[in-house]
Length: 378
Image (cartoon, rainbow, N blue to C red; front, side, top):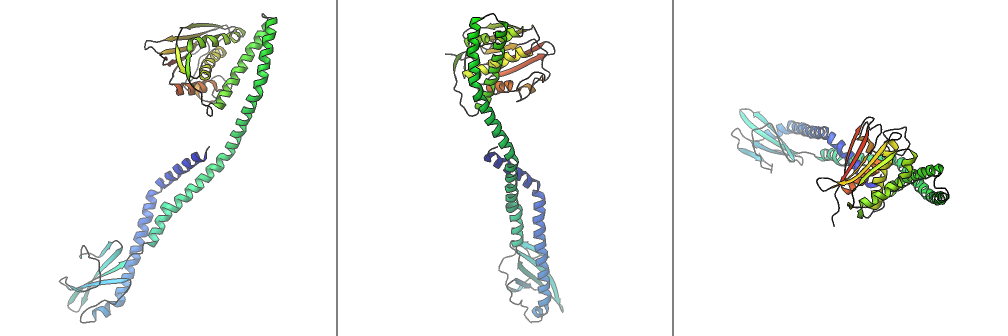
């Protein structure tokens, strides 16, 4: 997993957690605001109780100077007698009123037969609220993100290490196999010239071709994400005929007959190695899963929409779940050996080249793999 991928996962994980805690965080902030307002009201009440006698013991009521508290004093008719509140109030008929960044408290005070109204202003302290908000929406998300990213990187480090060992192992294996496969092939051809009818040589040739196909699948699987396979115009008909001859020995060793119906001059725009993987995996699977002395049919033609159709039909036990067979390392029949890469490779090639796949299968009757593609027109 790349650092960019772990960054994205950590960011998504953090966003999900923040979304889950949005409502609790909102109530936490509202609780902090309520606590600050309650505290301020209590301070105003204590200040008023401490100064009430002094204020209204004068002929003209006046509030003492204070840095924290401002006051307006009104008579019974709501006429201003004294005022040092600079902010204009939107209303005067209230008990408690808040207008950022201040809170106001109003009290009725009777002095003898006279009635007075006193409004006291105090500025709210938002430092605690800002601190809580910063913790909830900045600091804590940062910690969550940092820890998530760290845990993800630590968690995938071992996987990355194992993956690197596997990649190195496959690369080294592919490199080491290439030379002996070539030597075996050359010597086998020399032996075949001396004894063309030897059934043992034919079996060795069949086995060697199967090893070669497995080798080519692994090589393509390792390299296809790092190597750019250039497309070209290929005569599908001619190329398919060449690959059919490749499978003659394998079919003969399994007593399976191959019938082909290949229409000429059908062109396709694709990479040659990818086309070979598409053809070889389908025909080799058809031979592998067909019953003894069964039949395999390979068709290449045009359909009614002037599209190309490549079809491979086998006579085997059929496929129980046609959706899973394209998954990597998935094999329908676990008694058959293999890597389970072939059809996954085929699916990726079809996606990259706009080829449609259709699979039909019936128990003990076999399977039909159909690939529909756009014919290249000169």
